[in-house]
Amino acid sequence: MPLSAERKTEYFEKMKELLSTYTKCFIVNVDNVGSTQLQMTRKTLRGKGEVLMGKNTMMRKVIKEFVEENPGSPVEKLEEQCRGNVGFVFTNGDLGEIREVLESNTRPAPARVGAVAPSKVVVPKGPTGCDPGQTAFFQTLQIATKISRGQIEMVSDTDLIEEGEKVTASQAALLQKLNIEPFTYGLVLKAVYDNGSLFSAKVLDITDEVLAAKFSEAVSKLAAVSLAMGYPTQASVPHSIANAFKAILAVTIGMENYSFEKADMYKEYLADPSKFAGSGGGGGGGGAAAAEEAAPQVEEEEEAEIGGGMDMFGGEGGGGDY
Image (spheres, rainbow, N blue to C red):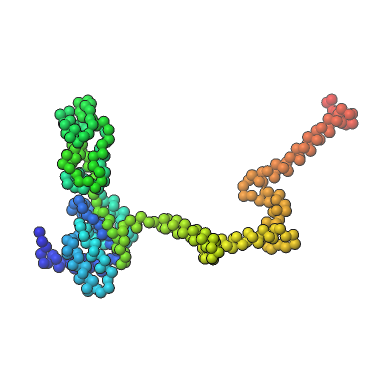
């Protein structure tokens, strides 16, 4: 039923207000999404964003008028996105948070005849609850079965529908018999508009951790190339300084009459490594040093005992009990 002139005017004003108020929006595909599910999405987004649906011709016309009234406005890019069964979700908040809300609001749905399968459907093996009189139905679909305990049982998992295929009447009937709702429907993110930039929703998969890892990898490669070419860059300078220090240190260690402050510690270590034996952070080094100190004391005690024995047998000291 076409909208009245008053409703159209109201819709135009509403969409223009959203275009001027919000700087970000999702272009979403709403295939197989019912009004109740849309209402739930609106309720969840309350205070965070607004959902706008409408005919593509009307939305394109509103965008054209808005651009004419605001020359140079970047929202002109949204006009080409009004193709198919789409809508807009406007927000000024975090796009990642809004995305989570949209993707979480899904519901299971039965397979309808003629619908394009959004995912592969596999029917698991096992009892079906169907009586043996319906065996011919399964044979039509080329599904191997057997009779077990008075009901039909599927002997193996069956790939019933491939992704992208249209659901046939037999496939839909089988899924209905087995009480299987294989698909989930919700708002599918098609594209993202952010302050004049339009990009795929997959870009939101790039987190701060991913960016940091990619940046670190790129800097490492740049530093390697710069060092190989002998061309200094901001990425390679720290490595060049470290390499230069190693070269100077190697020369200094080989010279007996010259040193500098940073090289003194290395030369001292090479001259007498035992000085640094107990300076390790762990307790193992200290324990080893203590054991070395304790060892001579034990030897002295043993020697004293042996000495006492010589006195006893030699008659020098008086053996006491002996």
